Image (cartoon, rainbow, N blue to C red; front, side, top):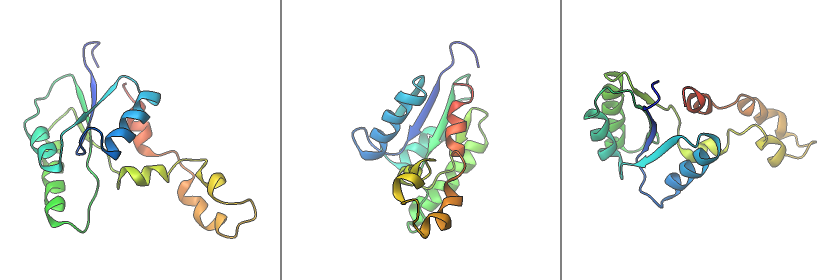
Length: 140
């Protein structure tokens, strides 16, 4: 990336809402050069990606996966189509920001006592560092 290029994280949630606050707070700590921008809702996020030009800027797109809302499922398909047409757009494959909270490495130690029978059952899914974190760290 060139010195003048930037990395943006575009989200569907409005400023002041939970996921906007989550991403802003998290990125301020781990990737302060990434700018979080609200697109206000999923439809506006899809339009923004569709109209995006290929530039030196990089755009990371977060749209909560939804399986129970047909409108959002259709928007997810459009978003993937438009993102695939762009060289500078990456869709972050996450279920929702709340799920990310469950992926942190130390969560098992925080949730389960050392002798808890459920510790081993749930531990495997939490062992690897989240892929989205690696994505944010590259080229920023």
